[in-house]
Length: 356
Image (cartoon, rainbow, N blue to C red; front, side, top):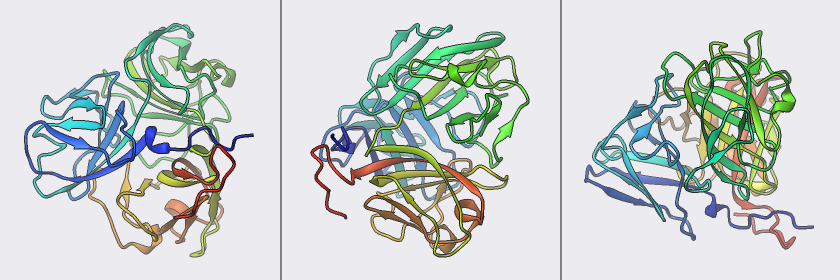
């Protein structure tokens, strides 16, 4: 049996580091061995305390939301102005305005142009890649009550990141398979809260509402009430992506987490207690171990470096924590994560890849 169906992860995800020059309509070309036209671009200025900006092809160019804020979608005519066959185009605003500053962009490919999806009780607009297990879903949450939304993945999502586009009253809401033990539980990527339980349904009438065709929601609960929303949905693909959890050991010789691939991008959040950031790592800002260039999804701060408690190693088949900080390795604490591959440990022919 094939180990993975994705021998080249760069067809589906790539990170890009570039230096701003304030030029108009600047083409940012991805560095991968294969061209990839992104459908979701998440960018951050590494050198200044400015917001994260998230663009996607379903909402359209120039329209952004920020992972560190609850603000509604806004439009910036000088922001990201094009999704290209080998990258994206930024104008003279946030994505290219601070000459000499370093930026990072994390880019995922979904399914290109969106199409209508009527699998749920509420019709959605979906761009989906069933091969990569990633879809972008636009929908209106409705006025009240439980509902289901078609996601287009063809398999059950392990993680969903959703935000109201039209309201600044509601936080981001995150579903992760290892915290959603009931329909009441969720995380918010814009803050440092632990797993939250709002006392009523967040994810529909039952966990079974989230399945191979739909995910469940409940409108009118103060989270997604009667607003236009965007959701980023992820199914797990062996050798390419993983959405799971681990328990910290509180030691400087920290936990090892087996992924079955060498990671290119990693997001970690302690789910068991409050006050801990969403930690972001990638293989373009840190090209060799130990990885210690840290950005956090819930805050606008510039990149932090040289802080030993954040040290982490990217290994050929997983990652290892190299510190004892509560944000990624507190003793007995639980951490959820999402990870995407640089290369699978074993390719589709069953042949191990060389460790790098």
